[in-house]
Image (cartoon, rainbow, N blue to C red; front, side):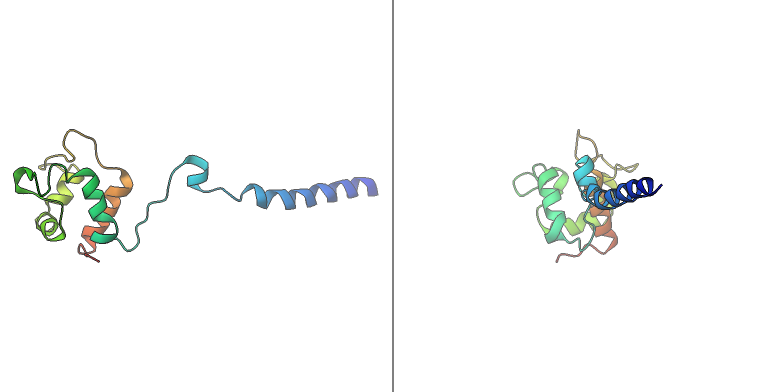
Length: 125
């Protein structure tokens, strides 16, 4: 009987040592390659200008500004933020052109960041 209890005790002890180590890297990035979406302190300078530079400025910048819309400066961005166009076009809302043109919606995290930024008053810094 004591041998049986000793074996059970060793088995439980072993599990207590192994289990915490096996859960060590259980996060979305490690498990699935999914990076968490940073939604804290979103400003023009911290996140938004880079998103728009990567997705919009080639058609809406200094050298080329389709429909007079530019996304290459904070001052220019406030125009389309304040009249609701930025939210409408990037979220593909009814009544707005779907942007980026001829592409699907921006990645979910980038859309979330843009919407939070607008909801927070579109801060620059």
